[in-house]
Structures are given as C-alpha cells and as structure tokens.
Image 1: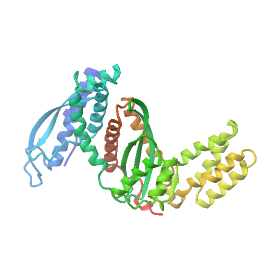
Image 2 (image 1 turned 135 degrees about the vertical axis):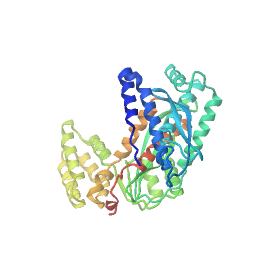
Image 3 (image 1 turned 180 degrees about the vertical axis):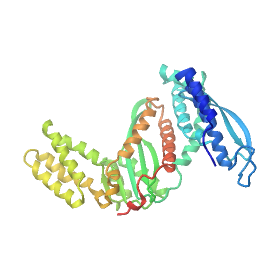
Length: 389
C-alpha cells in the first residue's frame, strides 16, 4: 500500500512558505501533520478511504479537532478517528509527553511564586494566561501515572549496561541544591539500545547508586556481561555490591581527561594524550598492556605521579578488549550517554531551576521515554553477531 504524500499537499506547503516565509511555518507544519496522520490511519486500517477490501482492519470515523501548542505556535490539527478507538497517531504521541512535562515544570514554578518574568511569559504562551495550582496538580498526576509505569516496567536480558549521572538545580527545603539524575542505558542481545531507568537523588553517594541498581535488578534486569561508566566512587561501591561478578569498563574518554591532572607541565599534555590514545587503539589486550608498561617507564623519572597513576588506573579502561574489535569503539566510553545528557540539558535549561525533585524526574522521564521509544524503532546500535566475546 502506498504511503506517498499527495502532490496537492506538497503544492499547498510550497505555496504557504512562498507567501508567508518563516511566518507560515506553523501552518505548513499543520498541513504536514494532518496529511501524515491520514496516511498513518490508512496504513493502520489496511485500506484507502472508501475502499472495499478483505484486508481492511477497521472503519474510519471522521476527524477530531485538536489544538497543539508548539514552539512554532498553535497548530490546529484534525486528528483521524476510527470506530473502535484503537488508533492514535504516533506523530502526536512522539514528543507530546516531554512538552507536557516541561509545561508542568514551568507552571509549578509559576504557581509556587518562584518563577521569573521569563518563565511567566513562557507559561502564558504555553498554558494560557491563567494557571491554577489545581490545574497543575491535575496535569502532573495524569502524566506521572504514565511515566511511573514506564520507569517500573519489567526488564529482561541486557548484555551491556552504561551508567552515568548529571546535575540539575532544584529547590529543596527552602534552598537551591544540585540534584543528581542517575541514568542507565542497556543494549539488548539484538544490539538495540534501551533506556533502562532514571532516578533523581540528592547526591551520587553509594546508597543512592545501590538503590538505583537494586531497582533495575528487582525489575528483572539480568544477563549483564559488561558495565561501562566513569569512576564515580559511590557507583564503584554500589556496582561491586549489586553486580559483583560483572566486568567493568572505565570510560576511556574520562580516563584521558583525568590523566591531565597528573601531567606536571602543560607542554607534556599532547604527548601524554597521544601515548594514551595509542594504548586505547591497540589491536589487542596484550599490545595495550605492553604500551602501558612503556608509558609507565617513560614517565617514571619526568612525571613519577603520572607514571604511578597510569599503572594503577589505565588497565581499568582495557576490559573492552575481551570483546570483538567491531564493537569496542562503542563500548569503551560513556559517549552514548554523554550525547543523551546533552539533549537533556538542551531541554531542562528552559526551566533553569526546578521547583522540586518530582518536577525534575517528570521531565527527564518523559524525555528519556521518548528517546528510548525512538531507539527501539530505529537502527541496530551493535550488530548482534558481534556482541559475544
């Protein structure tokens, strides 16, 4: 069945943009979304409008108007309906949770009287001129129910797990504090990525990491063959307590950054960085160990503290050599999570300061849930045939 966009729709979009320029983006996006939803309904029903065919899986039931508040302004959409209500366009589902979470976070700040004029203006633009605490609570409760189900969903086997943390400013006990967002990403036996869980805590203390890892295991996480993370002290202790027999790969990117603290002269940094890259890019573990030994000997006299640090720490970043070369580059750092954290920061900086931990957890959960869904329907991250040792 064809899913091509009719030429008349393309002509309409071109005409809108030609006449209105950037001011016509909202109208153009509205046309695109409306057509995309109609095409998706046709595909879901297995038949074109008014087409009689044994392959038809239901009956269309007109359209329902819906106003969506976006960064481009209000989008007046016509949402396709089916008689048994089993269909809802993915174009609206994707991104809607995070937008709602952001609005609730901003509205909470506004209602609690901690918002700035900028936040007040954003709330009025997104939510209307009047916002009450009752409205905010009702929106938050509906969203929290959906996000809690996602955070508590059962897990399965994930051979690889990547862990990291980032900080956001939150009001807590009348003060502004830095709260930590703990995130776990897994790669399943088919090579697909999935966000396993997220938690908001007051610090990266061992008790908080242990509680987080324990919750993943309680939800059925098993089959973990490698953990990739930075050398957070609390995480190290929690990892050893919850998953004591699982090998650990220390992030090579952070290792190289940490090494610079032990370089006595700025002029030596480029040379030290090159030596470490040679270790990390070695063809096998034996060659990497040989290069570590050479580096220790090389800096033993000129930079004894660096030599001692290399000997003690760099081997923690070589665990990944136990896996095929084809997948080492994607398992040797936490870059996957670093990119994810940058995307989180792009969205959370709109709020700047969260009114409480629940508000922060709501927004990051919505963003991560949407990202995880996109990953599951996207390309394979690691080729399944290369995931075994």
